[in-house]
Image (cartoon, rainbow, N blue to C red):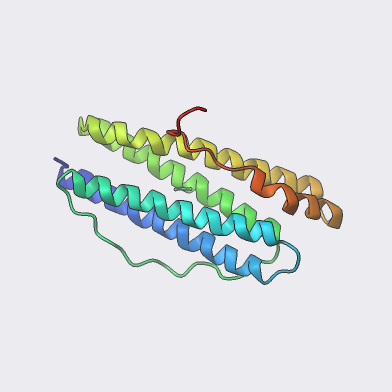
Amino acid sequence: MLSKKMNAALNKQIKIEGQSSQVYLAMASWAEIQPGIDNITTFFYRQSEEEREHMLKLIHFINDRGGFAEIPAFDKPSLTFPSLKHAFHELLKHEIMVSKSINKLVEASLKEKDYATHNFLQWYVAEQIEEEGLARTLNDKLELIGDEKSGLYLFDRDILGVAVEDPNAPTP
Ligand code: FEO
């Protein structure tokens, strides 16, 4: 059974994951109207879907453990970006914020001696390592490319190959 305190803390994370989904959805829609970056657009849509899944996973966990997952309102995300670099920088900053929030939840679960929640959160810890790492790699690549058009072409061509692996997926 979830404590009221843990339930409230997890509810806050629902908002953070759902908000992430909205932020990346806005990036996807903006990218979609920029010429020649179709795969980057797909990447943002895919990230948005993943964040929605992270949110759903929390909702089911809370409700399955006798709590109540409250569905929050979301804030309006930034709709446009001065450049692709800015959008990817925002993505990295956002993931760093999510990681901090997950770490706080892990801390709270230990304080409460809620080992089931602690165990559940390990998936998010692993996922954040992957997502932050991916965001850093993409930012580094964009930095290298600078304003070079051919570099951007290759970046767009290759981006869908750099998927975030599900840490719980069975190894082939
Ligand atoms: Fe679910 Fe990328 O944080």
